[in-house]
Image (tube, rainbow, N blue to C red):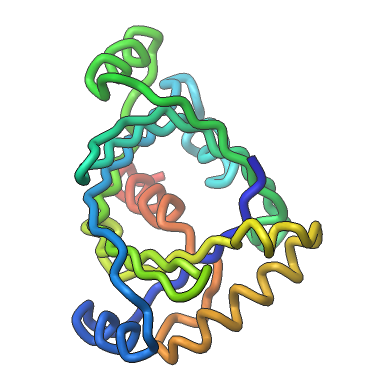
Length: 197
């Protein structure tokens, strides 16, 4: 399934972000908690390129909302030399139990490389949906925006990203200026720091 999305890190506190977004007529749609477990085979050399490491990860995702659900996910992303996402596809399968799937993967020599906890608030205006994420580690406030089905009719990902950038800029938030913040990459770099890699 083709996806085009952007993620920014916001340098304002959560309440200020919510205030600004609501002032622009975005309406609250839902709130949920999500935890991702990044699993990798223990034979993978963690000294290789971070993007190559992430390509070898399998995610187990636990979502807690009005209708709790769990997924096994593989994200197939291609990057250019600057680490910019060139293309991305996601394979997702619903699972019954996070713990059982973790045990299965651990029994074939996978380990949990890191976990990302995410308290998400979803806002919508017209057909645009944005997700405000309060992340515990890597700590911060992030906003994700995904292209709509109509926007995906354009097969040029860069043109679609330009549309998404304009929508994010219209929020008038103070950000790092990076439109493709990779939370998993930040978390992985912290793991490597702890391991002195």
